[in-house]
Length: 560
Image (cartoon, rainbow, N blue to C red; front, side, top):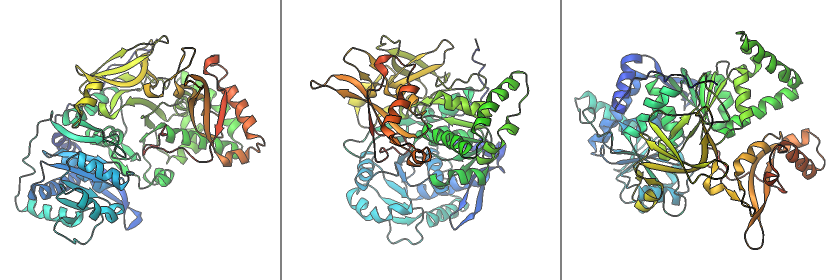
């Protein structure tokens, strides 16, 4: 049995300020960020760690000059370099950072701004049309600072460029208010909202110690390479902490993806060696590889080469770069590592990428845990699991069912303070330092964590059997023309869950390409085939074919 390798050695840091200072000291002239010029998409802007530190000090000095350095500072907008400057600047201040979901409605934004007690709002161009309404609805906000704004039309609706330029002048004139700030690492530093569109928003309170523990302990388990394409939304802790904070700790270069539709194009442009993804993206890449292989007549060859390559690997011969050259080239030529989280991944998808030499490390986390709980690692990687628990964490299982799965509870440096201004919700999930994730799971024989499904999604059939819909969805996702699927229960007249229904959205192009006449009959047969190894109570009894895609979150997870 393979054993968990020794922890990696990691230099511990105690503040974001120290984090950036170390990066400047050790890699000051190295690129920290690369992104397309907003006026010329053919031009790449390079920002070194030295330059980035000066950006944060200029912006921080500007914020301190208007006496907002210890306030709640919100930001909303697409992924951008300016977004990152606000993020790191506020983390280095004595204030609180409030990232807002860029897909929220106007009412949702107002809801979060009010609940979070925000005093400043930094925003991108697409929200300009709402600023006057937000200003009227949230009088607590003293300043609105537009990333794309060129002219300032009032005393408190400002241009980011002019604002940071003022800060730079102040800094050069000797203003050290911001650069001298020190903060308590165990007080509220970031307020992350996991809801907010309707009803009372739920604000996760994270400390600087929480945030830094993801790097201090996560890097003891996992390793990252040197250059990342940053794709996932920054208002999510997965990309903001596991992506952006860890990149500074490892002195890597973050290339900012400008649009989801440009991911493949930007892989070619920036040529990264690692990327953070959610399973929906990884699944899309996987299906596109096989669809392209079938279209070019190379699918049979690919299927034959993989076991040959694996056999050669066992005797120390690695020809994967040669065997799978076209796949590497599609991803820019340098991609070596995919770190995947936020939802379960199909084990065969993970195995495929590992087989071709692009290591896929599946992990598990939740915003309330800053967000990293566990992750797979080099030499101890099993895509059927979510890997090894971080050394700062403890895990226990509550309400264990007959299958041996229990509710996963986490205790450790990454666990949140609680929910902002909501003791009732906090007390429900956080007891004696233990956070109940409401996910069901267990440890395998090697000590790796296995997550089977969400408590709220669990289907309890009338025969008493527990069914995790996520497990069955993984099987159905194997069908090449199934684009999206959720499994739900069929209820009888008295509300008992008596059977399972698969609701699917199909890839129409793939259906046409396969010349399928009776799609319902074909789908039933294919579902029966891919789920044949499941017990009878987990079989699908009905299917529903959707005309439109499912509604999704900003990390591409289906809203159930």
